Length: 442
Image (cartoon, rainbow, N blue to C red; front, top):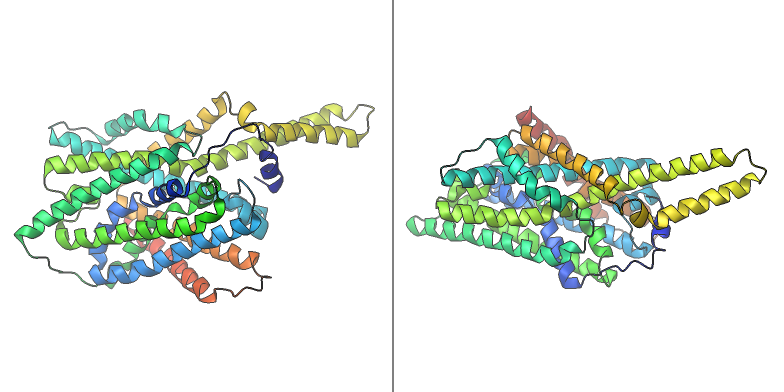
């Protein structure tokens, strides 16, 4: 979506927009970062070792925090409503890179949603197994479809302002069950560390750790949803620090307790079947509330692509119809421009109000997600692949590059060291992390 379209969308003053408080944005941003990565992180933490995982997580967390701050600083300086990630890329790198970014964002978010579905499917199968009901993967996927499809049609991000905190509490309750189970295990034996450092599995860890900081795509939408957008920089910092603290604490405690019993999905490591089912249910609720929040930017991008094509098609037809009339061409173009403006201004009311096109787009995305999820063999390696290539590129590389270009003429001190750290982390993850994950997936 170009700048003129943003300006046009701002003209819709008759539509009442709900704005979130700092507290609501805090929970929303935490929830967008506490996804599937946090319950797979303990498995890869045990693979790389207790000490080495800490050394790896610190630069990744730092890079995520700084890149988010970079995007917020640019948005604050632009001071424009409804600005998206791709809008910033277009202003700094050009239209081609903006389209490439849109496609990459769609792939990353679809990948995350696929990971969520894999968890929901395996959780359902595991829970049913506890009551002696065995179901195939396809059957479990079809059952989850009944719940996921309605959530996929949520259009307003304000819906998540009231639900994200409950999803966050559900995730915390699930984490508490894990800690309780760890405490029970420790009461029977002393904690020990059989694996402190394992360099060999380093790049099995990096991509998953990056996906513990997966909220870069919701930074600008959540910021824009606030009553006071300029408060979001501090809100984002506190939200990310909370999410990082939960992720690393849980992974260190659980991996050192379960040791070789640590499963690829942490919740499956709980031995008590009742506690396991409760924890799976709670975390499933949390992910179900996160699923549409992650799908939201991807759907928004696709809908805008369709809308742009429709506007261009109407523009071409109007010019063709009026090309043989006696009125000047300039008047025809002006008339066409007015019609395009009307469509852009009222796009939510006229294009998607009947929900037909919206239902088609979102249904196709969900079907694609389900189809791919069925054929993914191993969740941790898939997450490592998504995080290594798309997470590093979109969450680290692009924010650094656009921040450098946007503030190149600024007299303020440039954070050169921060740039170098983030780029080194991202390039190593893209090259070595992607190669390591592909080796296991193919």
